[in-house]
Length: 87
Image (cartoon, rainbow, N blue to C red; front, top):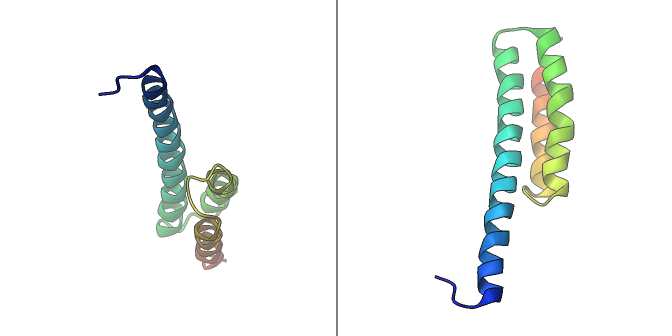
């Protein structure tokens, strides 16, 4: 347990950041899952709208440092490729 004021403050900041990062990461995963589910059900229109929602959120996660920029690019590329298979 933290004994100094600065250590207590650091613990609070870490808890807040962890909660924020977890929220962004899980929301991003939900959006990705929605795209994959729509593609699995062969719903082209739904998949495209889900992709349009997921891409900015993946970029946001990369900008915030929650995932690496290369990981974000890879995810976006693979989702685009997946949705284009319905065309």
